[in-house]
Length: 84
Image (cartoon, rainbow, N blue to C red):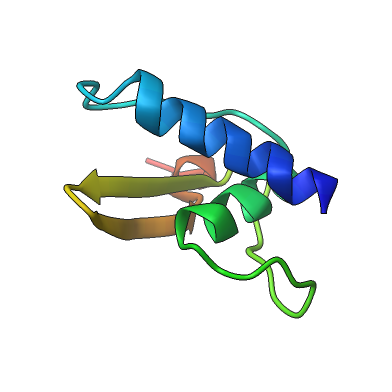
């Protein structure tokens, strides 16, 4: 429960302290990111579900007025090795 409240405090601080910012980066470990996503989506604090975050996985969240959008979750294309 305390872990979830920590994620909610971070989210609420970002939303209230930086309303005019177009981009904010949050870097953390998967457990906090999962709770952050649940807070962002206003989901209940249960262990029945979570959000997987791979190593260096990126998530893009957007707030438009009162609408909260998930544009992508756990994007890892930057890890692909491409041979020329």
